[in-house]
Amino acid sequence: MSGSPFEEFADAMASSPRAAPGTARRFERIAVLGGGKDARLIAALCLAAGAGVILFSAYGAELDALRRNGGVTLRGEGPIGTFQVDREGIPSIRTTAELDTAISQADLIFLTGPVHKQRTYAMVLADHLRDGQVLVLAPGRSLGAAETAWLLRVGGCRADYTIIEAQGLPYWTTETGGTLTLARTGHVAAATLPAGRRDALDGLAAFFPNLDPVASTIHAGFHDASALVELPALLMGGPALPDSRPAVPAEAKPLAENATFRSLIGEKHLKIIERMAEERRLVASRFGVRDLPDTGSWISTYAGAPRGDGARRIPGQAEALGIVRCGTIGSLTPLQSAALIAGIATPATAAMITLASTVLDADIESAGRSLASIGINASTIDDARRILDTIAGGSR
Picture (cartoon, one colour):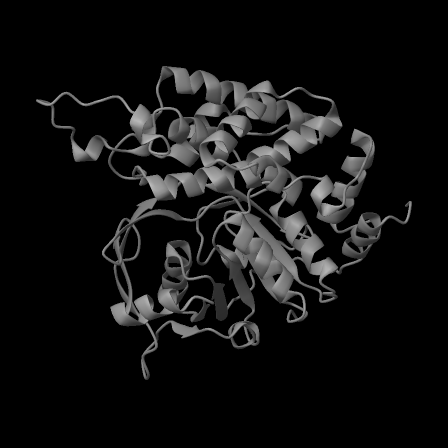
């Protein structure tokens, strides 16, 4: 190794012990970092499965709303009911605004919210993690686990932790008046960093039954096709640009059951999605990943069913713009970064990044995850693959 900071980091990750094969870990104490709807969903799912749950938020408004509602109410295709908050004498979700209190006894820690919040959590956790704790990024998107490990290392963390990068949640959620209505999602790729800690991944399946284990977080990252499906639908006639949506005739009354995410994808969208999918597969193959799903499977995973069970609802404009921001930062920019080192042109992906940046009125690409932003300043594809394989594989 050359002795660069990132290669020293890679070497340290490679020396982390690998868990012995065995039964699934049993996670009994859960910490959920964040107070958004994903965090509330995860907290309720873990409580429903019998775990002890504590939810941390640094925002008083989030905690106040949760306590005022008295719990998290779930409807739809998942577990049904209201899961109580801060109730003595019965299983309930505990809440706190103290990070150290939230994670001190936790064996499983969820980092929720958009990419920038996951980054913040990684930095502040560096001084608090202990051996054996497991961190979950869901969705981890591309390079999520590697970036988190890098930030923990920069922050001085030396604990023997495990990161699980999962490319989605078990349910899509629609929030109405504090109630979350759930729609079941498809299977999503997931892996651990370091690789080989299957007991942790199998333990997470108690709460996330839709996980599809893959070889490493490199594979999981290239399996992340969220943005190549979501961004064309949201930006081209979708809710991120509501003025461009086709008008409904005055005499027409659209059926609510047909107002699904899948309905946003038309023939032109499919062509763009296919082009972006081809680019992702080509770059992935240069990094040794050749078992990616076909485009139709990716659309089913990230857009949901056309209607009925498993249908994903169309998000409102604010949520749509948040999806565009995270998809660009956490999925498209990493792909573009890997393509640059691999010497592969990705014009469709680059055009979508430019469109997203224009709509958001910000240089999103510069804020995105890239190999360089987490210290991989490799000049060749072989160097980049070697360092990534060292980190992800957990073996020399």
